[in-house]
Length: 380
Ligand SMILES: NC(=O)c1ccc[n+]([C@@H]2O[C@H](COP(=O)([O-])OP(=O)(O)OC[C@H]3O[C@@H](n4cnc5c(N)ncnc54)[C@H](O)[C@@H]3O)[C@@H](O)[C@H]2O)c1
Image (cartoon, rainbow, N blue to C red; front, side, top):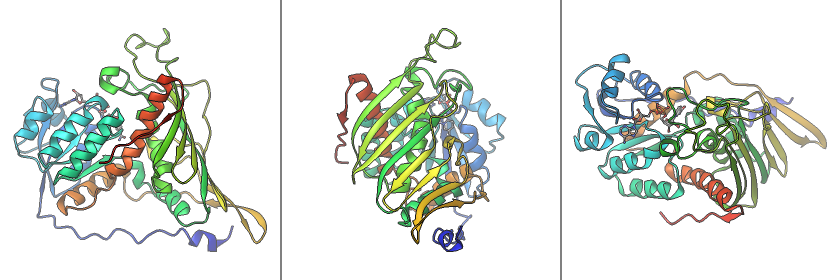
């Protein structure tokens, strides 16, 4: 392995941001279920943040949540996102609701110029994603989408490898992943019911696999998709929640992207297989393999391998795994707070995730129609 090659992908200089901690921002938490805990714990590490409000549709849930996680001070509680925003006390909110209410909560906040950190997936349909992007464009608020693996050092390295040009022109990508058995029902059935989740594995963990590769190659526009989805495991009588299971537990798609790139994707909450394969990004000068990865847990499954030719020899370059100095979730929260305070750029902009959602929506619609479809994204 040549040191010169690895030198090409060296880290950017470390973040040495100087922050004015006397300028505080007021945060509200909308939806106080499972993931809200990670938001609150990360906000509690920011001395320039005050959590001033929490809302949940379930009576008393927000109060119990704040007590459990030691959210102190003058916190106000509300029965839904609307009353919280109408109170006019928040500079920014974390939208931690189930997928089906992501769009209404986010749009309402942005319409009131309140910044939003929106949990993944962005929403359920492309139509909702377009409405979110329009609301963001018209708002003074910042909107960032909650993809914490973006901040993982190995994910960043994957992007640097692709962006370095070492692979040449990218023409084929395979990505996805999944679990042998892992339909998520951590605290109830909000991930698997149609009314609350809207989409299953396709949106829940599929959005991460898509973001990993699309972010690496610069988010080209998706053009067409042939999709498939199924629910054999969720609907099986042997699964305890089969009576309420209303989404996909497996999905696959073959997507044409702008720039002549083909994306071959599959994702599973449950399957009779250990893994549906590694992620690969193939280019005219080299290809990179990302060993089969649970990228929804934040990182890659092993060292990246670049397959290329050097001085006429076919060479494999292994990129050593990197440690994260700071937890990715903490960076997701900190970078959002910085963007709100400085009216800065969203760390994960909706203009990119719009294409992620367009693919998810396209797979779903193509699967229902039983044929390939064109992905049409209206002007924002
Ligand atoms: N980034 C991550 O690592 C990660 C991990 C888990 C979940 N998530 C995402 O976070 C979201 C929430 O997941 P969860 O497991 O916390 O769900 P959950 O069902 O445990 O909690 C969602 C809460 O939102 C509340 N809610 C819904 N609509 C509301 C509204 N309009 N106003 C106020 N409250 C409302 C519900 O009553 C519920 O208590 C999902 O979209 C999921 O995909 C992200």
